[in-house]
Image (cartoon, rainbow, N blue to C red; front, top):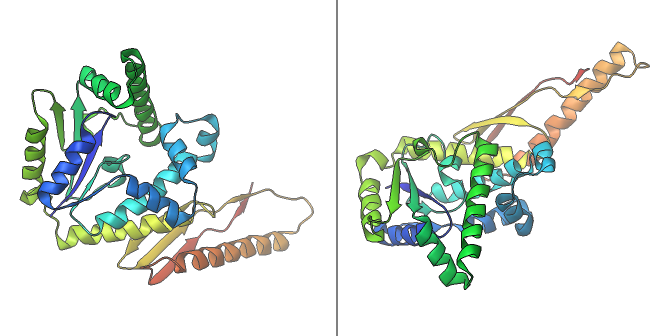
Length: 283
């Protein structure tokens, strides 16, 4: 069958539609579960993960790439579900975290602002002005981090296969349209597309696991993991001879290779590891 990602603003009926579509198709429906699994996989703080997703990019995050780091953890957990196929995901950035997978149907749900405000007022028992301010702030934050991380606009229709506006189009109509598309040949998974998911899942897991060690390019093919690391810059010291400097560079590379191998070998699905690590260089 297919994998469906539902992108939506808060109080836009996206959760309701995702759950109904999953029920109609007999698919698994996931959202917050992905965050919990990311926390478990990488032993991180759920509070810190949520803060990174919801708050605007701070100066510190721009310097340390904190948000990219946490999103890579979410991608790993999401891909573990997607490997099983037949999934509806309505969490953070599903349409961006599953690139180049043919059987992923990417849906954007829109709703009129007035309707969203009413829904929020009913749930939170707050004033219209408070509800309006909350929704506008949430929309702004989502747009900011999409722009910051992916250099694109969350409102760009080109990011999605389908954009549905809940208004005249009722929730049941939207669910029927999504289900019909998901059952089409276009979004039917194949052996080749499922293999692409498995390869992406493993390479994403390896890359995420290495983030605190080095910045690596990673790809995988049937359990074989290929890791490329560019040489790191070292500060030259005046007293060391060229021979000593060369030995230091080689030792740093050997230590990094051992650390990478030790870390990656523990990841399920890894059969062989191929490391291409450039020698460090002196500035």
